[in-house]
Every structure is written in C-alpha cells, then in structure tokens.
Length: 89
Image (cartoon, rainbow, N blue to C red; front, side, top):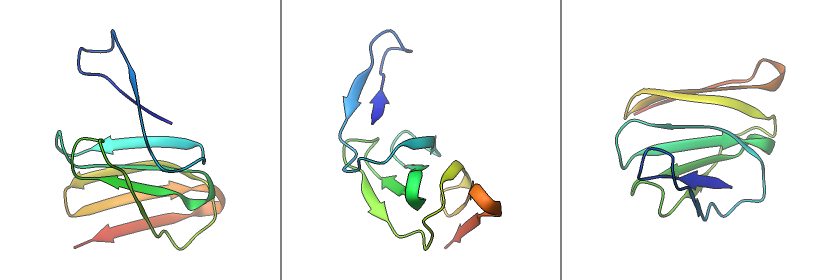
C-alpha cells in the first residue's frame, strides 16, 4: 500500500499500487517522478506523482529495503543478502 498526502501529513490517502507485496521504501526526485521497492524484488515506478504505479523488472526475488535516486536517470536499491541494484540511463 502506498499513502499520499498533499497537506503535510494531516490527511493521508491510499494510492493503488497494483501489488500485494509489502513496500519498504519510496523516493521521489521530483513531484512527479518516483520509485518504490519491497518484498520479492518489487520495484514500482511512477511518472505522475503516484496516481499510476508501474511494475519494473528487478531480476531478483530478494527483499529490497531501500531505494535512492540522486538524479532522475541514476538510482540504487539495496536489499537482503547483499543485493545491490543500480539503474543508469
């Protein structure tokens, strides 16, 4: 489940994520562009601020604990058993 707020956290709304897997981390590099990671190697990506989340292939079934994107074209995810994933365009 992904929760979204537009008022600094007073009210939170659920957003459809199209996964039943637990999500552990989310990051945004802009108000529109974000990623979420979690159980079973789940990676979700949004380009519209989280209204629509799309699954991305991770190549792993390990839990992904954290995701960070220092730029819109370069990011990292880390997970269980030493899993480290890197994206670069």
